[in-house]
Structure formats: C-alpha cells, structure tokens
Image (cartoon, rainbow, N blue to C red; front, side):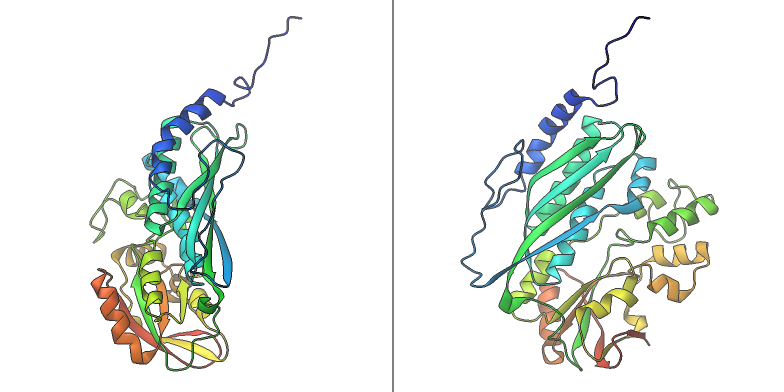
Amino acid sequence: MQQSNLSYRNAGVDVDAGNRAVDLIKEYVKKTHIPGVVSDLGGFGGAFSPDLTAYPNPVFLSGKGGGGTKVRIGFVVDRHDTVGIDCVAMCANDIVCCGATPLFFLDYIAMGKNVPERTASIVKGVAEGCIQAGCALIGGEMGEHPGVLRDDEYDLAGFVVGVVDRSNLLDGSIPAEGDALIALPSSGLHSNGFSLVRRIIDKNSLSLGNTYGDLGCVLGEELLKPTRIYVKTILKLMEHGLVLGAAHITGGGIYENVPRAYSGQLTARIERTKIPTQPIFGFIQSEGGIPDADMFSTFNMGVGMVLVVSASRCDEALRILDSTGEKAIHIGELVSGDKEVQLV
C-alpha cells in the first residue's frame, strides 16, 4: 500500500499564511507604540519598560476579555475590523475603573483557517482600540485550530496591564452617602447580551441587512458598533481628583455592575428617565418580549460607564466632561441601603 507524505499544511495549518498575516499587521501595531515599548513583533514575549517616576507606590492592574458571541455577527456580514476594539474595551475599561492607566495589551486569535487579510482586519481593530485606550499592542498569538473551528470562524481574546499609584487606587472604599452618579453614554449594545440578541434574531427571522424602526442603519451595522473606550475621559477627571468610584456596565447590566463601584451600606438610586437609552434597546425588548428587569440585568441600556463623584463637585465634573465632548448625565446618587440599585 502506497503511503503519501503528509505535512502541517495538509493537516490544516498554513505557516506561510501566518507569516503573511504578521507582515500585514506590523503597520497597525507600530501605530500603537508609546514610550516604554522595548520589543518588536516576533519574539517569544512582548517587552515593556514603564516609567514609574509618577508612581511612588505603584500597583499593577490586569484585565482580560474578548469579543464574545458578538463575533458571529461579524461572520455573517463579513466585517472584522470592529471586534478588536470591543476586545480592548472590555479590558481597558475594567482596569480604569480601578484608576489604572493602561500600559500594554496582548491579544490571542484562534481561527479555523488563517486568512491573512481577515486576520489583519481583526488586528487593525485591536490596534485602534489600543490607540483609543492609550496603550501599546506589544505582542499576541495567532493559532489555527482546524477541526475545532470552521474555516470561517475565529475567536478573539486579550489582556491589558496598567498601573496606578496606591494613593489613587479606586477600590470601592471612598464613595459615601450623598455622592452623585454620572452616566457616560454607551454607543449601543457594546459587547454583552449577544447570545440573547442572536436568539431573538433567529426566532423572528430578522435580517442583518434590513433597517428596523428608528435604528437609523441596517441591523448588522447597529449590532457591530464597537464598545466605547472611556479611559482617557476618566483619567482626565482623575487628574482633577474628581472620581471616587467607577463601574463599567458590562455583563449583568446596570443592576450588577453599579454596586461594584462602592462598598458598605449604600444603594444607588437612579432616575430611570435620565438614562439615555438608544432605539436598539427598545427594538430588542419588543422583538424578544423581554421584561424590564431582564433588560436592565442583561444590557447596559444606554450607559457604558457610571462614575461616582462628590455631590459638591458634580457640576465641575459635568463641565469638564462637556469640554471633552462627552454627553454625560447626572442620573442619581448614593443613599443608605443594602448595596443594590433602585430605579425610580
């Protein structure tokens, strides 16, 4: 019986495609470089040498995240340059809630087949996210997983490392009764609740290429709007000593995330009518028949970040935010209670 020679390519892994993808992404990675970057792509690790002169007692923060099942929307419409922004946002928005300045980011892309142009598009989005967060993309990994993922499938994850001086660490211990709550609007769904969204799309035979209701664009475009990155905005407020706590509104929605900004016997009392909910949320709720409580515990409902500031400095914070183009809204305050959220 004649035996044929096998190769890694025959098994579904194309090393040449991987090399071409690296060549294509180099220009995007270079744009993210900030002082401290030591290494170029291709090494066994990404090297970064931070300047810690502004941090007498530095504390390093790390955060991880991914694109979630939102990537499947990209598969259907064949658009891949936004999920990388989502991935960075999930990481960088989390650690800035602790007061940290993001320093560097690494990503990991698992794919059924490495299509260099598609891979480059994904990394282009990661690089854009890093630019928005002010951190450097110093490395990553691409892995072909034939037999595990289909040729048209991939998954994206990453992590960020940042630093804050211990004196500025936001750990939930500072907020007190009477402090004000400021909402920073989201761009839409961001990156959470997409398993439910996709179930509604399938159940109701909705088309990603159609425009529905007041969305103002086709459904696929609305769903792929990238997560906003709030790092530079929050760090600017911290320079003025205004941020007492922060909550990134991700999985678990407003109900689960806002209480992470404070500790002790406090409750966030939020005026629901002040929440800037966009049309996509009403559309999803109507199409899915979803109760209000489930909407607020699944989606951000129009609020991407909630900041805690002193009531006496709330107007000052709003003026600074307005000067940056941020449409921030005073949505409530902290009252005595059992560490929950009250929508009134």
